[in-house]
Each structure stands twice: as C-alpha cells, then as structure tokens.
Image 1 (spheres, rainbow, N blue to C red):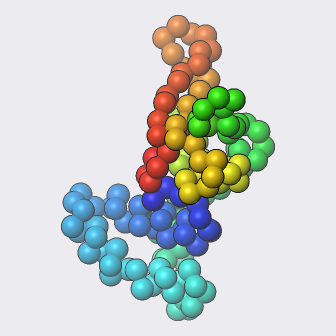
Image 2 (tube, rainbow, N blue to C red):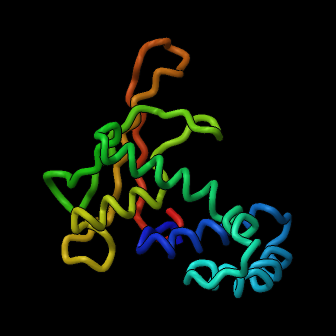
Length: 158
C-alpha cells in the first residue's frame, strides 16, 4: 500500500510487491502470494522454521533496504519533507539520487513515514491532499542544474 505503518507492515508490503514483480500476470502472483503468506506471517511474528530465514527474508530484503535508504536520506536532510505555508500541501525537495536500480526519487514508504511524523498523513487532522515534489535535476539537455516539479495526490501506492 506504500505506507510505513510499522516495520513488519513494511516488510510484508515489500514481500508482496516482490512477488508481484516475479510474475507476468496478477492471477499467478496472487496464487503465489497466498501460498507464501503463512510463512511470511510466521517470519514477521518471529515464529520461523530454522533454515528458512534467508529464503523468506529474500522476499522483502531489497524493498526494505531501499525504504531504509530513503528514510536515511530524510533523516540526514538530503531530502526535505515539509508542509507548505498555504493550503493542505506537502513539499518534497531532493536532488536526484542514484541507487542500485538507477535514478530514483524518494519512495512512497519513506514519504508516508515523513508525512506521518509531521502529522500530515491521511487520517491525521493536518493531513495533506497534495504533494509537490521538487527535484534538482542535473541530467538534462541544457547541461545545468534545473528543478523538475511533479504534483501528485498522496494515497495508497502513490
């Protein structure tokens, strides 16, 4: 759902996302997710069979690492999430960052967590209805740094 409600919830969501990307069609991914769900839930509750830790962890490891990297970027100030002075809008300012998957922007998990910590996530009294992303882009045809803006609505899956 693109939210960071808890570490376990994040790991479950990352695992389900990784299963989805392993298949070409949703029906096959859904069947695989249902097959593996009992093992995932056991692992997340600490009741994992000995010897199967790495197999189960592999489902959420990449997504969890990316979410933690994104959260580190917020915590260090490389990405700034704040409330706009007017309206119910959040502002996300960042330089484009390179990860193992190439260029990327702040992911939905860390964005949700930052909004939640600021009291701006859905269900909170100060919830924002829009997010303005401002990304410093030095990979453009002009050759100089420019800001790229994206306007979006917060929500499940971002």
